[in-house]
Amino acid sequence: MKITEQIKQPIAYEMDLFEQKFRLAMASKVALLNRITHYIVNRKGKQMRPMFVFLVAKMVSNGEVKDRTYRGASVIELIHTATLVHDDVVDDSNKRRGFFSINALWKNKIAVLIGDYLLSKGLLLSIDNNDFDLLKIISVAVREMSEGELLQIEKARRLDITETIYYEIIRQKTATLIAACCSLGAASVKPDSQEVETMRKFGELIGMAFQIKDDLFDYGSTSIGKPTGIDIKEQKMTLPLIHVLNTVSNKEKKWLINSIKNHNKDKKRVNEVIAFVKDNGGLEYAVKKMKAFQSEALQILQQFPDSDYKSSLELMVNYVIERKK
Image (cartoon, rainbow, N blue to C red):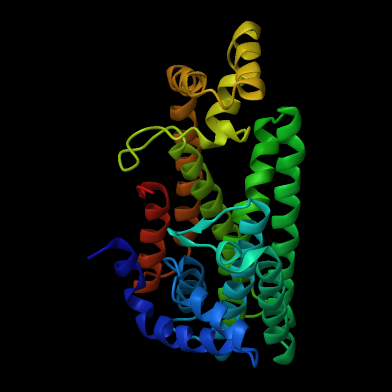
């Protein structure tokens, strides 16, 4: 059995019901909108975010979920999907998970409007049901995701990222959404409880580990085979590179920065940078940090009694850093 199927097992019923509710949450009277949202729903990914919501909700409440839990999962997925649709426009990307993106099929104007529509649907789903606490959790996440992206753009121009700033960028850009899923799962069944903050922290730690793992893929992995060097081409400063920049001589540092600034389209030079980062311990350092976030997340789970939901969350934490793509 695939690991994602194994993780999903204790919440299989909830996930099926969630899919039906999610389709309804997207519905509109406009035919074009329905055609596009139908396209989106049929090309869903692994659905990690709703899985976090349901597993956390059931773990902290002895297996209980409420209507609020389904709404929370739908809101997260609506808003996440909206940000992906907008991201594809911003990045001028024609593919998403191997399928054509919305902007590739229906052009940018429609894609931006679809993103706005999904965002407003998510907000209204919370407002109409007085889930203001859940709405606050999600709204904070959206604000932080935007700030994280802009901070990264600002820093990429100057290539002056320290490790502390890097963690702040990935916390906002990636970890904040997983943190929102986990705190929302807890808040949907136990509002205003200590678990809401505990599970937010848990999600944040997983998100940090997840992003470092993504950064490592740029240097090659068994499934991708060869290094991609895409981050270097885009002048994105990731942890392996930041660590090496901080530990090598001034001369080597100048060569690295010059390579990234002025030669990032030169394939041979990019491969030299990748080899240099590997030879100077950049990958080992990033793996060590990723595992530290992972073990801190697993530590948080130890506070809860054993259950299938807890086991699935432990599997999820390990899957995040062991995945091959």
